Length: 196
Image 1 (cartoon, rainbow, N blue to C red):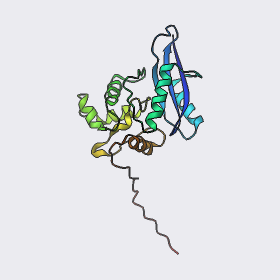
Image 2: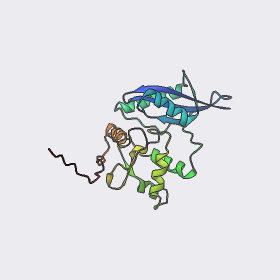
Image 3: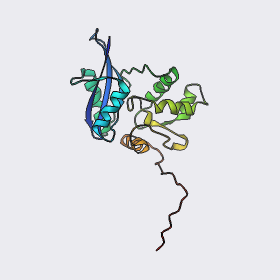
Image 4: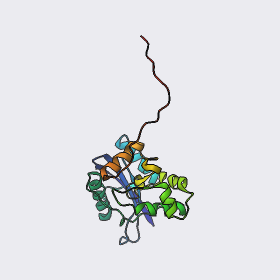
């Protein structure tokens, strides 16, 4: 039987959460990460979000492998860039297409970026840039599956579904020293005229 657990941990960006599954009958099997939650507005919201996304129970003592992943996440967010290709993930709710998108995103090294269109082409689906973006918008394991490294055409940020949206995406890319076009707030076309 598989057990699903989570823990909240502190980082330089704020409290994050990680959830994993492990085989209760086989303690020698490796745990697989199912969710990595970036900070929400409060620690309580971060915890609520990871519970909602993972349906896991709280753990006070994660397995050593998860502790090591937590250390790597903290180092990465402190600017000591890490790679997460060796982290075992489990994505039972992801479609086969999303699994392929996540696999392609995992190959993007820290400090580098690609576009939704380039991932679509690499998957032999050149017209699927929007579908790539939608799959990445549902990515439950942000950072380990580095969807923040995928940009819109022309180096524009595109979208980001984590709390803080494009500001969070910009922060993650800046930590990694990646090149991108800064986000410019949309101009609504209204002019404010103040009369005395």
